Image (cartoon, rainbow, N blue to C red):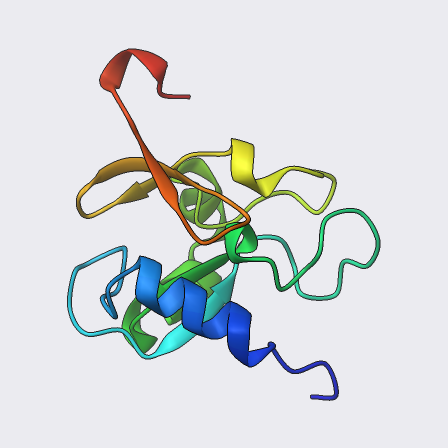
Length: 112
């Protein structure tokens, strides 16, 4: 594809997620876009808040189960301008991911 993920963004997401798949906890190997990659305008498509580090099995699961992936924050609507505001159900709890490559834990009472 002609729209490669910038190295800095890829490294921020991999470092933030400690090289682990955020869905199952095994060693990750792939960037996954939360908002569709084809969405242009609005929030930067390769921003760390729009990326997750996944293993290939979980990345394939997201694409095979889009409804469940959206319910758990792995996918975000193409109409959502703020992927950083949508929590993700990771293997270590619910989190939001910021544009600077950091994350915030969410407690049970502030889940979607």
